Image 1: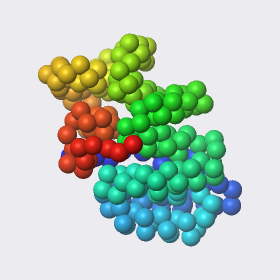
Image 2: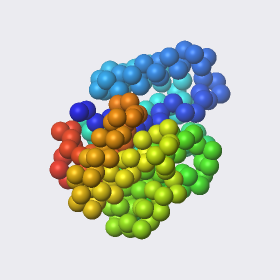
Image 3: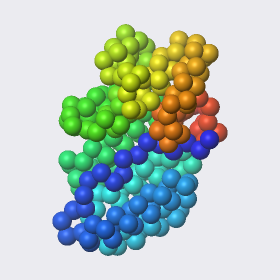
Length: 226
């Protein structure tokens, strides 16, 4: 399975002075599609086209950073610089700040990732539910990895239910089961999610479990340097 991080690359609108939204967004969506297909060189080339039309667009460094965060390239220092550039260009945009937290997540700096993710929930209280659930789920993974199981169970209890329109409840249960070395129970929760939700809905959650090294991935090394 090719690991593709949960990315929020096209959230904020083009800045003043940018080309018409349709032409800019068309190119950005093409770049995003190329990234999703694993065609990273082509995606970066497409972003060069976008930059020529809109040099100050926050989308360009944000999506470039997401590409450099992807496992085949994984240049974390370059990704950090790009996300910080995007955030400076568009301070009110959740996307580059989410991705900046994701860098700490893939580094396994669970405390730093947790702090950044929790701050997002405070700073963006009206975040759409699918994104909010992903942030909360990643918080729960961090809590488990930090051996703060009571806090993780509280996050699960207060944030998710089996009636939700996202698979967060099932994957949160699986994360806790994996942490308790109960792989049978964890895989049962994953199977339940598989019977309810589509692959595209499950994929970002499975990616997080891969980054946590609870699910195998050929794209990732066995260890991550912090």
